[in-house]
Structure formats: structure tokens, C-alpha cells
Length: 237
Image (cartoon, rainbow, N blue to C red; front, side):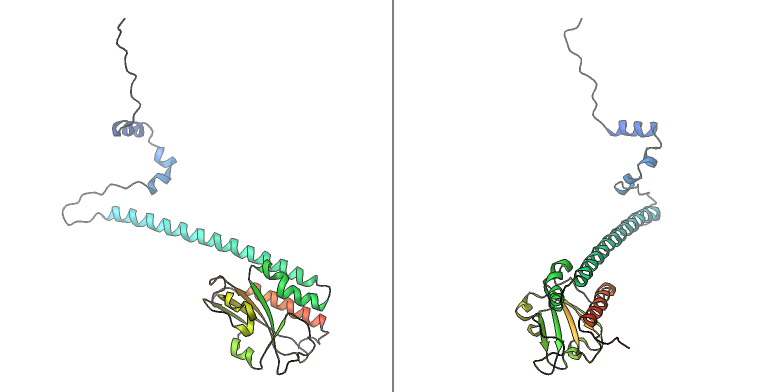
């Protein structure tokens, strides 16, 4: 018996073994199509100055696939965000409806639902010619000079702005925190002055022009009806 120990066969892979294994398993790439994302197809040599269109077509298909996957991911993320925003609005509406007095109703709008909606400050603004607001005489309400609503909103029901510095008349001492805002116009009956609800955020991209406003408008319609009930206002015609 030889005293020389025999080395075990090497298990190290090389291109010949890989090729041999793939030839023995011809369905491997069909079972693992994700490999095509990282593999480079051979570029056929057609001669000097002649392009291999098949190579570029495969490359373009990979790029198109990556673009489709990115778009799909963005749609999923947008849907998740919309569901989250919808849940926030629903929670805020329930809190507003549970107010036990008009003062608590105002406090719920200007303080309690702030964190629920993920904003930093909410201001309830009433346009008045004097220092007196008809039907409203509670803390948490800020006065605006006559004509301010038209100046801020024009004819819009909702104003969305990003990358701004908040206005002190709207947000008081918290104005410097505001980098984006949504301002919602409430339509009240009974000779009530113009009423606005301003949502301010330190995130400059939280409110951006062109965003959907269905949810915030729904909240506005709920607030209009609550104001009408608390102040015993006549129904809107």
C-alpha cells in the first residue's frame, strides 16, 4: 500500500464544468429566467462597421423591462400612500364628529387632528371687516382682513403650494415652520363670512400643485355640515 496520500478530486468550478453541466440540464435557463437580467448575450460579429441588431434589441428589452418594473413599483407605493391618506382623513372625520361642544369642535380642528393628518399646524381662518366674527367667538380662530380670501385663493376651492415660507397672518408664530401648505375654502350659509382651513407642513413636498384633492375636499364638506349644525345655520341653497 502506497504511503503517498491521494488528493481528492477538486470541486472547483471552471468554465468546462459549467458548460458540461448546462449541456446536461438544457431547461435550467427556462427555470431561472432571472439570470437573463445579469447575463450579457453574445454579440455576433457581422464584420467591420456592421451592427448586431439582435444584441441591441435584447439590451433595449432589458431596459424596457426595468422601466416597467420601476413604474409598477411607483404605482404600488402611490396606492399605499393613498390608502394611508384615506385612513387619516377618515380618522379625522370621526374625531370631528365626536366633538361635544362648539369649542371642542374648533379645538379638534386646530389641534387634535394635526398629528392624525401628519401636518405641523392647522389654522382656522375667518375673514371679517372688524374684530368681531358673527356666530364665532372662541379661541383657535384667526381673523383675516376683508378681501384676504380672494387674494389667497382666487376662485379656487383648494390651494396647494410647495417650497414656500408660511404667512404670519395665516399661521401666526408657527409661520416659519411651514414649507408647504393646503388651504381649503369652506362654503357656509346664513351670511357667514369666508372661512378657510389652512394645513401647513415643514415638509416642502407634502403639498404639491397637481396633487389629488378629493380627500381634503371630502373633509371640507364634513366641516361645512358640522359648522351648520353647531351654529344652526340655514341649509345651503
